[in-house]
Image (cartoon, rainbow, N blue to C red; front, side):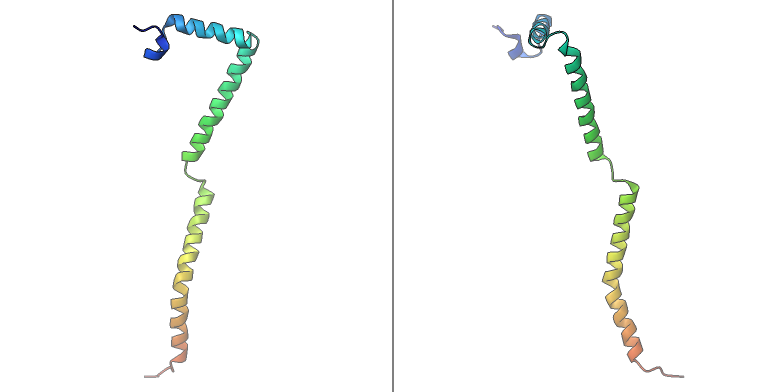
Length: 96
């Protein structure tokens, strides 16, 4: 009942040989090394892009983000600190 090996799953030996023969006819023997080389380079670039996407940022970028967060925290705290400092300046000093 399996007239086409492609439909039922992995192709067998004859199907692979047929595919290679058709590719040779389409592209020619001179173009195949060039095509496989470019395919390898493309695959390498793709994997490199995937690694760059999953790697954490450089340490410099992380340090800059941490510094920005620290500055934001200080900015959030500094109005309270400056209000306390101005309140202390307004209070008259009492000597005991």
